[in-house]
Amino acid sequence: MTSAIPLLRAAILAILPSLSGAVAHEGHDHGDVPKPLLSAAAKPRVEAASGPFELVGVLREGELVIYVDRVDSNAPVPGAAVSVETPDGPVAAAARDDTYRLPAPWAKSGSYDLIFTIASAGDTEVLAGTLVVPSGSAAPRNASAVGQTATTLRGAGTALTIIAAFAGGFFVARARYRRARLPLASLLLLVLLFAPSASPFAHEAGDRGEKPLVEAEIAQRLDDGSLFVPKRVQRLLRIRTVVASEAGHRKSFDMPGRIIPDPGASGFVQASVSGRISAPENGFPKLGTRVKAGDLLAFVTPPFQAIDVSDMRQKAGELEQQISIVERRIERYETLTKTGAVTKVALDEAILELKGLRERRVSLDKVRGEPERLVAPVPGVIAAANAVAGQIAEINAVVFQIVEPARLWIEALTFGALPDASSATALTGDGRSLALRLEGAGLTDRSQAVPVHFSIAGDTKGLRVGQLVTVLAPTGDELRGMALPRASILRAGNGQTVVFVHGGAERFQPRLVRTEPLDAASVLIVGGLEPGARVVSQGAELLNQMR
Image (cartoon, rainbow, N blue to C red):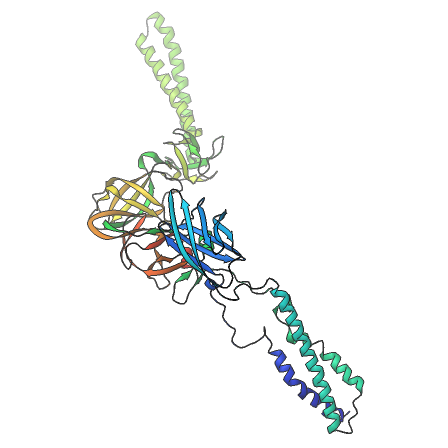
């Protein structure tokens, strides 16, 4: 057995070079992994722009896919007539979904000058562009089969290398150690053990059943900070743009505000006495239920202590006694008036006294048994409900609040001079713009601020009482700048204000800008942007999240 040790050592030393080469095979190299190319290089493309149209053509699987958009808004142009002058002659592109497509069998490696003719809605433009197809850009369709064949050959070569290394080690050991007697069966056993392990050392990604990396056009941020966004992604994200134009605008003054109900179309339902709340026959009205003025909402039954019940019983007994005495007196007066002993006036006074005593007795019973009725003071919708069966309501406690949702106001606070609030607008937290109508301003300060009331003109659907808003009112100062939608203004990671400029058909550059408030729907750009730039007005937040 000791004579076999040098033989095994020599065999192991002989196969180490082949093992090291096998471990460092392609697909498992632990060194630097080459970075993938940009998506812009994934597919050959051509860009052109003229007049109101902007065009991008992408060569994909032997077909030229054409995207036609409006230059000013980046909106797709459907239903256009698109023809292309190709090396094989003029070809009309067929409309499919929101693109136009035509077969391109002529698109081999090389450079091709293409002429596009677009006619849509009375506009006809001729656009020219160059399609550059690099050599080897079109991979063979049986690339996976070729890769598997190469992998199989590499695995077989590695297995043969290991077997040859063992055989060489065996004969070297025999020549150096004459006394070593390693049976041939042992050599064959070692070869059988190591030969199957050659395929794991030499396999690639395809051997594990993994799919090869597919070249896909994806949006990404480039090294210079700009964004490459393929037209296909722009259509999915619904990216829209506006052309910035400079003009004079009145500077705005912003005020914090909140939505309040219209005082003339809202009301509170309160208990005038302290008592136990109970529901009417149909139950308590639910939140959002529309009610009419005078509708019964709840009952409040005042509680009575034992001493109060005793006093009421005593008063009731006294009234019963007085009623009995007066009734007998009336009976005597009726007999005596016939003889003239009692005047008619005395009889009438006794009858009136009896009537008053009976009314007092009835009212005492009502006070002891009839609850207070809580009714709706105005028509509207139940906005708040604090009614629970059996709950003790305190005096002046708000049990229900009724609001008319179609008539809402905004209360704003101004800490300076009151601006021209006749054309003010409001901006909600979700970016909704509201037109306002001035109702009045206070003459007394409230925490060093003057309250100003506005009524909301237009649709109030989705608004709620207490919602915070920002009220913007124009001032007398005028500024020159470019008005852009508020959706275009973004905050960068460092807190700076940026917009995205549509510099190319598939390129977007972030620009640092300086802004001033204008109104609830727009912001005034006073620096950092040149007139005529195409600024993203829809989908800018999605672009800002791309990495």
